[in-house]
Image (cartoon, rainbow, N blue to C red; front, side, top):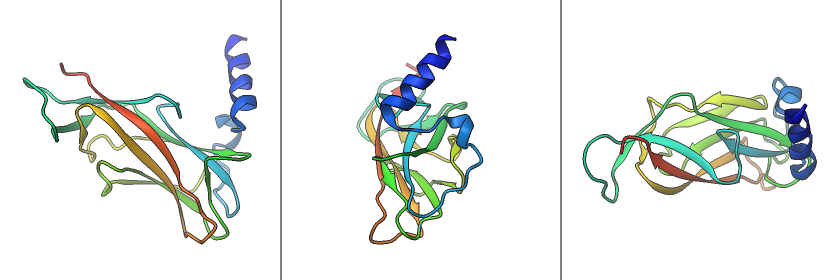
Length: 150
């Protein structure tokens, strides 16, 4: 019962649809959306493995498994697909070559084997509409990298 109350409070406070209700709903033009990392928009954390002694500026590692990126339909705020958007692409700005595409709202595994991310510090994930237009707006989500191998 407590988890239902928390989920309802989240939906009411953020205007975000419940993940179960929209998991197979297609991304279409003129829709608001929000990006999430590991189920969070605020204070999102990605765990990274950087074994060995010491940390230095620019050092990178691989994220651990079992982490997610998520795109949820929203009633307002966040990103906007604009008049032509039919998918949302998620990219870590610290490794922009790796892209996760969403054609439906829901969750996908973070591509741990492909990404090379900072061992510590803050970064951003951009959730950007594809088939962009002048009315399209990206959603930028701040993430904190935490090295679990220290």
